[in-house]
Image 1 (cartoon, rainbow, N blue to C red):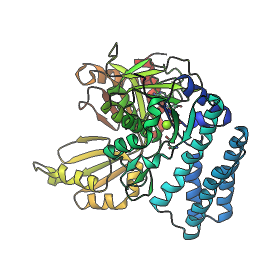
Image 2 (image 1 turned 120 degrees about the vertical axis):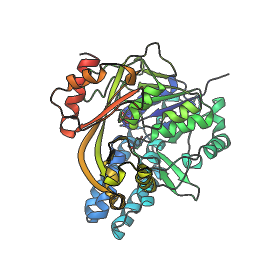
Image 3 (image 1 turned 180 degrees about the vertical axis):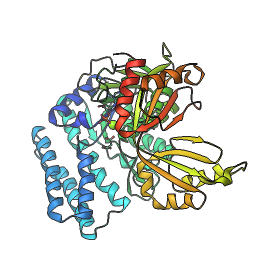
Image 4 (image 1 turned 120 degrees about the horizontal axis):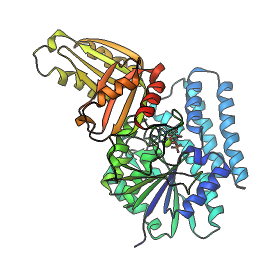
Length: 449
Ligand code: ADP
Ligand code: ASP
Ligand code: MG
């Protein structure tokens, strides 16, 4: 039986017509049945900037950003020799209309914000379908498919949750032609649709997650994530230039890396892949013949420290009250507040009368969260922190590891430590200003130059 392959190309693989044609060649050579794409490089950021400018500034400031988006997409269309711009211009005028609406009302609802952000992927998929047609020279039919017909989500705009069973049946209903290789679909990452028909997004970097959900829905054999680095490295090569590429990593290690900040994968990407028994490969669309990284259930080795990651923009909330002393149910009351506000906690430590948790800085925008916590206890907030994680194996059963870590860190102050819950992770908080230095020191000690 032929294998079903879903390939995802990120923003840098969609940077311009040259990158698109190169990526199309990779999809052809690697036998993709369905391709999921991100917006062209920088476009999601630009759409977000446009919405923020529309909220606060005059239309002429917005117009500059709209024009930049129009020029970029027209220039790629021109280089791909697209002569009929009707479809692209329809999407570009949607960018203008929604931003004009935001500007007139000085109001950007989460629904409007998702609608405008979705246009990045809707435009890039249109252009990429053309790049595929050029590369494939008519050997196969190429169809730009609107993934909102399949990727059903709830209505939490900005971080919509997929409805897995619906996605599976809709994949069967709409996309099964690609299984036989009759047609290759080009679809949009990052976006979905709520049950009542509104466009949603899965959160920044969500195209990886979309591709994994579609791969699961199709019962695919392999998910290929094509990006701008030739696989998963021991840490972000932008922070440590000596970072080494790894040919394999386990699902558990890769999931910890992604959850604890490694941008290479959206944190939830591996969940559908694991559920669906799908092999995952990460490679570079710029160097498609480099080894890349396979994510596996088991690897040939299980090093104590395989990799490290940084999660930026973290805040530490220390919630204290003498009422905690010898009482029960207090943590439950506190976590209930986080649950009600749908705020996710990354790490926790407790003492006799206080509990400290780390959250993304964005959680602090929700003033109600803090004021509700303050009805239970005093709350101290510390900002500008980073969570540094070491990821590997048997971490919670290895004598002397903490000593090695603190020796390597030297005079960098550690604000909070989390050790023990996972055999794959040791993480701690440091100030934003010293986070890169901390990772460099740990990388030199555990991985080497
Ligand atoms: P895409 O647009 O293809 O989704 P991203 O920018 O989201 O690409 O992710 C790729 C980037 O992830 C790399 O350029 C690199 O800077 C960063 N990164 C972070 N941690 C790692 C890691 N451990 N290995 C490789 N890249 C990493
Ligand atoms: N375009 C979206 C973003 O920049 C989704 C993605 O690229 O994965 O966040
Ligand atoms: Mg990404």
